[in-house]
Length: 77
Image (cartoon, rainbow, N blue to C red; front, side):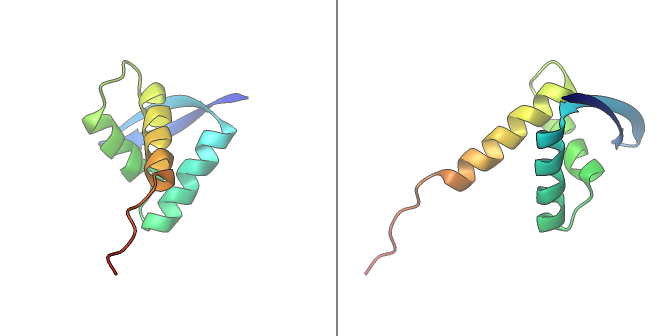
C-alpha cells in the first residue's frame, strides 16, 4: 500500500509516496550505510532524472539491489 511519508530533503520539508516494502528497503540500506534516510533521499534528489522524487527513490532502490545481484568476476588464481 502506498503511504505518504514526510522527509527532509536538502534542508526542505517535502513528502514522498512509496509502498511499505520500498520504505523498509531504504531503512535497511540506511542502517547498513550508517546514514540517515533523509541523507540518502537527499543524494537521490540531487542526482535524479525521474520526474518525481517518489519515482526516483524507487528507481534508485531497484538499481541498488540489481548491482548487489550482478555476477562478480571470479578472483584470479
